[in-house]
Length: 219
Image 1 (cartoon, rainbow, N blue to C red):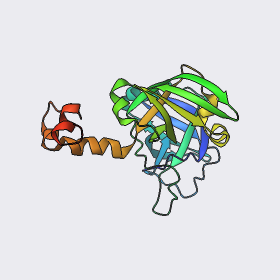
Image 2 (cartoon, rainbow, N blue to C red; image 1 turned 45 degrees about the horizontal axis):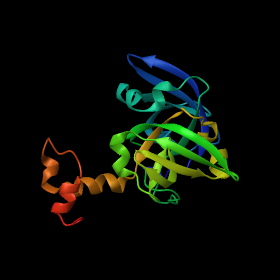
Image 3 (spheres, helix red, strand yellow; image 1 turned 180 degrees about the horizontal axis):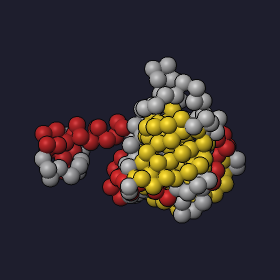
Image 4 (cartoon, rainbow, N blue to C red; image 1 turned 90 degrees about the horizontal axis):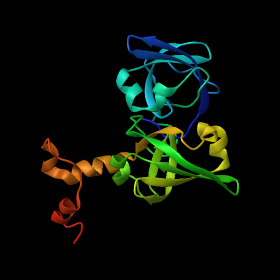
């Protein structure tokens, strides 16, 4: 588990293909690795990866074929900058929100413009994630915990303050950029709970207006 508060901007040092998978070697930047051991989890652009080697000022992690296909990690190149966060502990301040490091989909940055010292971003999410994104709710973008300012269908808006621009790779974003998205954990589990016994059905497609009406949530 993670908090979505980025601790360092790292850099891809090497990508080593291994039978369809890839081993990433990542320079950790200012991320403290003195207490990191093999098997620990580190989120890389919001993707939970397992440390398989420590390399002085960096670490290596294997990325499976599935992760390469479902996240933006497959598009990284040597020199790419990445957001890094170590897994939280029971003493970690929860400054963001609970993040699992399991990416739900890839979004596309539609627009970026300045608003005083902040940036306003508009991101197109996959249609199937739209029902989990709520006004003033939380969303994780490339591992960064952010608050949704507005929602229009599958498009949502964010306000990025100067500190976040400086301390994450969001400062590199340009329209067309692909970003990893993880929706709020509570929204995902709430949907399954609302399905009740229907959750066991192979045809269960999610919460619908008919299901909400059946349980008295809408009239």
